Image (cartoon, rainbow, N blue to C red):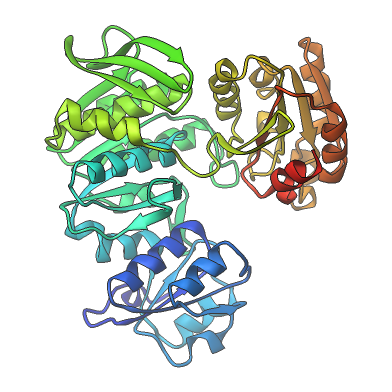
Length: 473
């Protein structure tokens, strides 16, 4: 492969994005369009909401991948990591000798390198923390640019091109492109970074925890000495990596020895209040409509970065209090006949456990019925088979769907929802297995009672179960 093509021409004005309907690629397309570039794209799966978002932006999208999508020739092609080197569009880009780059290369070149990047990474909590940091900066008048992996309710968007000095980036650990297997977060030079957690995930990319840990280790290796690394003090996997960091360090957590510490936590629905100390000194009193200990930790990390960027405790508090959350993160989709239907993106065992723990105190009148669809490349594999059962301990009733697209996973590696149900039942919890979504809806319509919370957890659309349940209840 001629890597001299792997660059951005100085006079590039017409930009084509291959696999434009991915969350990050779609956001990049919108940011480029907002910045005055002529943008077009292609994808194999063109459907709402991304298709309608791109249409409203005036970005034409071709259905499917083909050399025809590159005629007339663009000045630059951004190739998403969904494309293999043998994809017909990838092949055509190289045959036509068109300049091409990966998504993180483009984001860095067009936006992040011109700002002071604030990078949020880690196995859990990236999207909420990135959105919260963006909102805190925005509400303080700092006009940030941002690109995150979910729709922030305050902005009704997952991206923004601002005039201020900062850019908030959600940096994930997925590979960049078929020609660059490095994690995306290695492409950025942050002035401040947040590391929320390090756990095994993305079994389709990483062999084991050691491989995940090494990826984050390389991230720490590359941080500039004047960069501030804000990290979760109570994560043992992060602790093992700290000797590799040569930058400024700011641990946060709930323990007494964390530089940034939350205490005096009180849950009084719809608010959670807590105090924050910095190096043992009172920084401020905060309250948030977000639920759960994990969101208090997210807010702590944001406070540390915002304070280092010059914001007062009062400005941080106002931003945290007025932040409305992320679509699909503990999002109440509706209440029908006293039954609440909540949508959440949780799929990793830790995220499932923390989500159930978080919402439990806010729904005491009825039962918490956890409905789970194992859909990710990791959750459809057996890697977490024996880890999932305790995650459901605080639910009153558990409903598990058969994993979709299971045929794409090698038979010996497949996750068993039936076994998960048996293991949950062995722990003293009621649990049921269902082959399909229709059966789940039929069961829940008969089973749900006023006061119950139906907590739907999946990283996918789950066959539009939320709207269908609300209509049927």
